[in-house]
Image 1: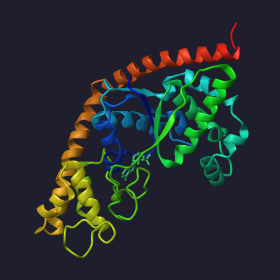
Image 2 (image 1 turned 120 degrees about the vertical axis):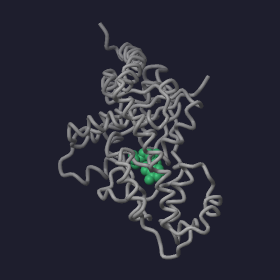
Image 3 (image 1 turned 30 degrees about the vertical axis):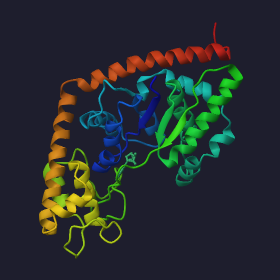
Length: 327
Ligand code: AMP
C-alpha cells in the first residue's frame, strides 16, 4: 500500500516562478509515489491580521495555480482546511492534551510573538491545529521546511500521548525536510531568494504576472560585466540564476546551455530566457483561467471536501468516544 503524504499551502503572497521550479514541479514529478493530500491552510493564515478580499483571492489562486502547473486532482485529494469543520473540533480535543509549556517553547511562536506587542491566542495554539491537519488523515509523511520541523515533532508527541492515554488512534507522522529543487534567486538582487512576499516586484516573476511585464523583468535582470554565459553562482549569481531558470523550464543541462550560448551576448541570452519564461507563463495562465471559468476549481474542492470530511468525521467520533464525550 502507498504511504500517505500531506502537504499544506499557506495562502499568503503571490506564487512565483521560484515556487514552481523549487517546489511545485517536484510535487508534479512525484505525484504517483504517494497517496497525496494537498490542502490550503487558510485557517493558519488568520493567526495574523488579513485583508478579506486578498485572502479569498489567494485561496482560489493557489489551488487554481497548482492545478494549472500540473497537480492532478485524480492523483491528489485537494481541499480547503476551513471546509472541514471537524478539524478545529479535533484540534480542541488535542489542545486539551497539549501543555502550555510545549506551545510556548516553539521557536516560531517565540520569534513571531516578539515582533508584535499584541498577538492572537491562535499564534500560540496553531501548532495544535497543524497537528490536527496531519493526524486527521493519518499522514505518514509531512514535507516541511526546516522552520516547521519542530511542529511535526510536537505532533508526534501529542499523537503518542493520546495513543498511550486513550488507545491506538493516530499514525505517528514523520517530517520530510523539503530539499529545494533549484533555488531561484531574486532578479534584482540575485544573492537573495525570489520570494512570494518580496516588496519590490521587479525581482520577482509571479505566475500571474502580465506576460510583457515578466519579459521586461527578465530583460532587466541584474547580471555582471563579463559578457560570458557561464554558470558560477558565487561570482556570477545573476547569469547563473538565469541559466537555472532556462534549464528548469527547458530540461536542458547547464553545460548544454553554456555551450549553446557560448557566442551570445547577455541581451541575446536574456531574450531566450524570456521566451521560455513567457511560453511557460502563457500556458499556466490559460489553464488557470479555464480552471476558474469552467467551474473545475469548485468541483475539485467539493470532491476533496466530501472525501476528507468523511475521514475527519470518523476520526472525531472515535476520539469523542475514547475521551468519554458521548451521550
Ligand atoms: P514559500 O513561498 O516560502 O512559502 O515556500 C513554498 C515552497 O516553495 C517551499 O518548498 C520553498 O522551498 C519553495 N520556494 C519558494 N521560493 C523559492 C525559490 N525562490 N526557489 C526555489 N524554491 C522556492
